[in-house]
Image 1 (cartoon, one colour):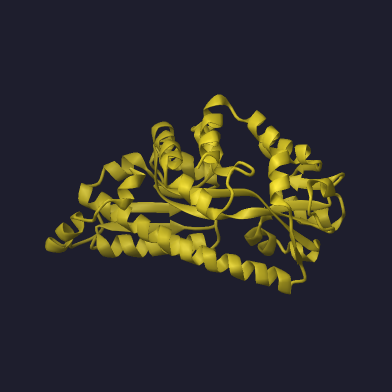
Image 2: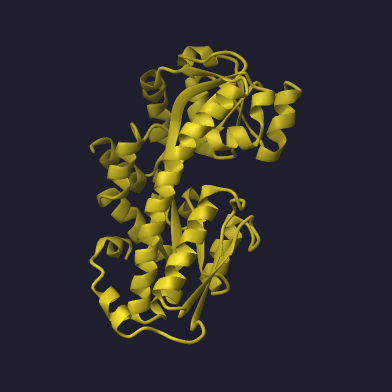
Length: 322
């Protein structure tokens, strides 16, 4: 279904030839966790505009940022129940579709081009097919997420520099195992507790994308951003399959075309934001350190491979071979 994004837009001429009139026949509730200023919300509003204009008002899109419809998992469940329709979600989908775990595996991707090649090729097709089959959600667009970087109060260039480092990680077993293999002392902790723990020296370091490093004001309690790029990942915009297929095909195509436009819109905003974030953190006093990413990747690989089941390992190997 997702690959229909790249199909022609022959149905567009039909829309122009027989324009719709009157009130909306369909309402799409689009809930997500980002705040109003976040580029994901900007992208959602762009999608809303495209859908409503190109359906001649036959489809209304209601955007609910800031978890107004619930947490990520709650919105997924709501879509499955038919009380919400669209959300932005990532590796949480592995709760139903194990292949979705590959959306956030340490050092699976060399760079952004490698990630894009995987997402838009056979690897992405496999993941999307399993998501659609097992969750009843259809991926209609994907966004790259900023790579996760390590912040600390001492420069980290090699894995050996991690020895004894008390590092906060999310409660994800793969992340814990990977950082242990690299020599750190990973401590699972809720994100809301991280700033205070750093301030009180309960922990020494944390790891997150630059966007969260900025929004959480970690520059006030951390001196260095160590460019480990240890997790490159992406996230999907998904719609309920039942809702999508309940619409006439011409309106389904409006949604898919709008999703393609949303993806391009977000990608441009994302690239601009990554540049802005680095400068903003430097201006806030943080020093950027170039880490030996190859050394980190090599030392992490055995722990990563040990955490994957056979189905996931096959997909992981396919990514490495791209």
